Amino acid sequence: MQTYQYSAISKDGAKVSGVIEAFDEFAAVASIKETCSVVTKIQAVEQKGLLTRDVFTPKIKERDLAVMCSQFAIILGAGLPMVRAVELIARQTEDRRLKELLDQVAGDVAGGVSLAHSFETRSSVLPVTFVETVRAGEVSGTLDSSFRRLHAYYDRASKLKGRVQAAMAYPIFTMIVAVIVVAIIMVKAVPTFVTSFSEMGTALPWPTRILIAASSFCSAWWPVMAAVLIGIILAWKLWGHSDDGQIKQHRWLLRIPVMGKLSLMRTASQFAGTTAALLAAGLPVLNAMDIVSRVLDNRAMGHDLSLQLPRLEEGKPLAACLRDCPDFPDLLVEMTGVGEETGTLEHTLDVVSDYYDNETQLKAQKAVSLLEPAIICVLAVIVVVILLAVYLPMFSMYGSIM
Image (cartoon, rainbow, N blue to C red; front, side):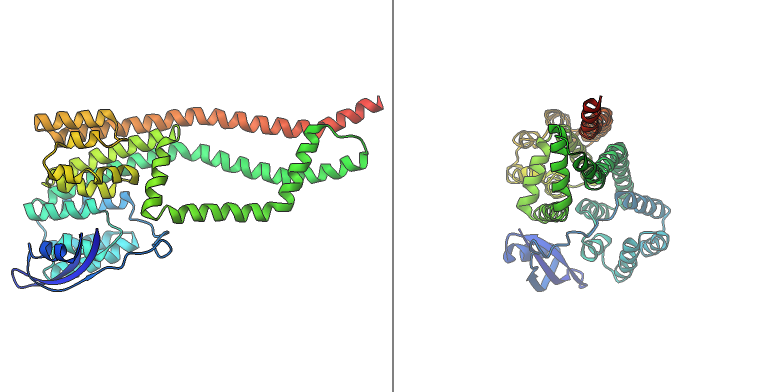
C-alpha cells in the first residue's frame, strides 16, 4: 500500500486536504472522489527508510488518551459546541504534544474541518483506532458515545499495561543490580586478590585460575564488550523498525517461554477490545479488521490478520479467517464464531477481552513468583563460586603451614 497526500474540494464546496492509503494513484483518486467532487492535487508520500524513521519518537500514552476521551465525552454530552469543547480540553491537558495538537485541531474545526479529519492530518502519533472511531461517531451522530467507548478501551489498556509493568519491575531491577555488582567484583575486587595470590607463590586451584582469567579478560576488554553490546542493541532496534524485521522479532517473541505466552494473551485482549470498540462505533467487520491489523502491538499477528482481508471481502466469516492465523488462540477463534452465529459479536469480544486481561495479569504475577526465587538462586550460586575461588588458595596455604 502506498500513502498519498491530497488536496480536494468537497461536495459542499469546502477545501479539504489529508492523506490516504491505496494500491496506486488511480485507486486513491477513486476513493477521494467518494466524498469530494474535485481532486486538485495528489502526490505520493515518500516512505521513510530504516535509518530515517522516527525510531525514538514516543507515542501518546494510553493513560493520556483515556483522560482526553473522558473529557470529550463529558463536555460533548453536556451539549457544548465542538470548537469550545476542543479549546477547553486543550487548556486542561498536561501533555505538551497533546496540547499543541488540540490547539491546531480547534482552529481546523472552527474552519469547518471535521474532528476526525483534523486528528488524522495533524498527528502521526495518534492510534488509527482512535481516529477511525471518532470518524464513525461523527458519521453516526453519536460522537459522545464513541468517546465514552474510547475512554473505556484506553483506560483498560493503560491499567493492564501498568499492572504488568509493575509486576515485572522488581525482577528486572534485581537482575540489573546483580549484573552491575558482579561486573564490579570481576573488574575491581578480584584483581586485588590476584596481587595477593601472586605474592604467595603457591599453586592456585582451578576455580581460582578460571576466576582470575575471567577477571583479566573483563578488565582488559570491557570497553570493547560494552561497545559490542550497545551496537547489537542499536542494530536490533533499527532492524525492529523495518516492517520485515518487526514481524520476525515479534514472531520470535511468541516462541519465548513465559514472555511469549504473555505477549499472545495481551495481543488477544487487544484484538478483542479494539474490535469490540470499532464495531460498537458502527464500522463494518472488514473495515474494523483492516484497522485492527495495523494497530496490534504484535506485528506478526497483525500481519497474519492483514493477509485474511481479501477473504473477509469475499464474505468469509471472521472466525474462519482467524482460524487460518497460526498464532491466534483457539478460545478467541471459537468465541468469535459464537458471537457471529448469535449476532452478539461486539458483546462477546468485549467479554473475551476482559477474560484475557485477567489471564495476562495472573500469568504475569505467576511468572514473577517463579522468577524471583530463580534470580536469588542464580545470584547465590555466583556468590558461592566467587567466594570459593577466593578462599580456596587461603585454605591451601593455611593447610600447608599447619
